[in-house]
Length: 268
Image 1 (cartoon, rainbow, N blue to C red):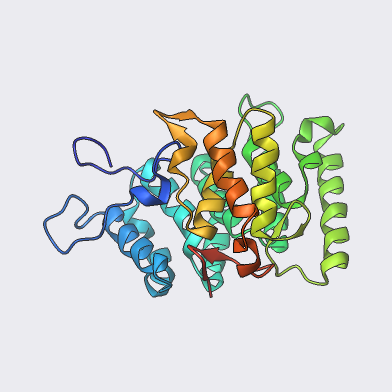
Image 2 (image 1 turned 180 degrees about the vertical axis):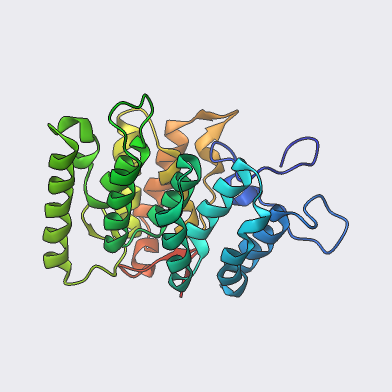
């Protein structure tokens, strides 16, 4: 929430999911806007009710600005039930605008199934243009989070075809290991909240932290990560303290492996 009372989505260098205004009835700054619809879904999902989240996919027409469309997609990735993602995948497949396509990729990455890595790879190949100054590098980063950090830079491969082959082989290996493609993964293995925390701790030891990792951890656990930043500046010691407290408690055991959560509630 800005000082003037306006809201333009969660601030991942600030209050994150704890900065969403409550969806008051009538008269507040969100009423009638895409932010109002999203706030309703967030508020309900924090309490374990995902009915509004399942309806959120139908509100895309209200996400009329680039910013609101991006936030809408990110939110879907964090709270929408799996049944909503067929629509997103279809939208991604027919979207020619690179910016909006990357928004859909963000949602699909946030869900993070092994099959989603294949969807992201197809999107990368379709959007990649060898002569373009700006290519969809973020998709490669998403794929690396899911399959393993050694896949983080497609430019390490001799050609885009080599990259595709490398990623495809990795996906096939993981499918053999897990026996399915319909399971959330992280760093080449079944998703564990503790694995996300370990990735964040490793990044912090190197002096930085990715906002999308903070988002994923906060979304899954409901742990307030606002202390990670002061005035938009990363506070490594504070971030370490929050993550290590989580890892040294019995909290990780309360989350089943290969399950999507929002604020500790299992997403259907």
